[in-house]
Amino acid sequence: MTHRRENNTALRFLTEEANWPLHLPESDLASNTGLRNGSQYCLTRDMVDFRSRMLNVPRTKNEEPINVPLNDAAVAALRVAHSRGEGRGRVFQSAKTGAPLENGRHWFDDAVAEGHIKNFRWHDLRHTFARRLRMKGAPLEDVADLLGHKSLWMTRRYAAFGSQQADTSPKDASTGGSQVVVQ
Image (cartoon, rainbow, N blue to C red; front, side, top):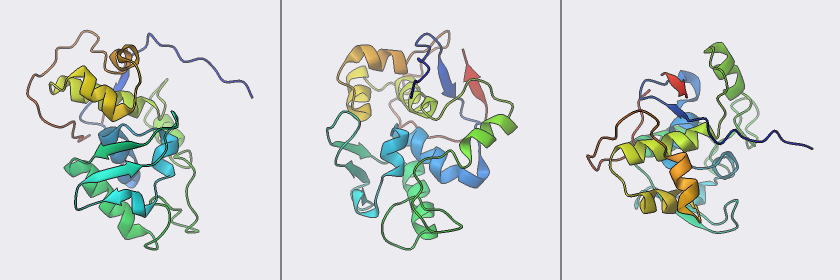
């Protein structure tokens, strides 16, 4: 299978107004944790520690574990996802069959098309997370650690600002909601 190479010069991220109401837990978790699609949809309930507000992913794409702190929006998303399932196994399960979901294709591509959004992929939610952290004043090294990046070059690309200014207040990258910007 051949894959189309990503255009590394395009900046893709969600503004605070982005909103997909039927699948908010999935999109909110992605844009508030920076998890890759594969890591998010492979999450099992035992990887979620609500008490310490942490996701403990034992193996990522880079073959290394990652511990991701959870902000309020991510905790809320996980609580909704937990309330929908059988109480065991994967966090994200099919509402129709209860089977574990492998990815967000069952809704994401349609939501993007219905919103008349062009050139936006699931992975762009990861860029959204990085950019929001940087806009809130998080050091580049911290963003790299949260994303599991091995190089700051990659993190710089993810957290690019384009022509907009950064907010230097050190708060979390909490989402809210609706417009997609592709620069």
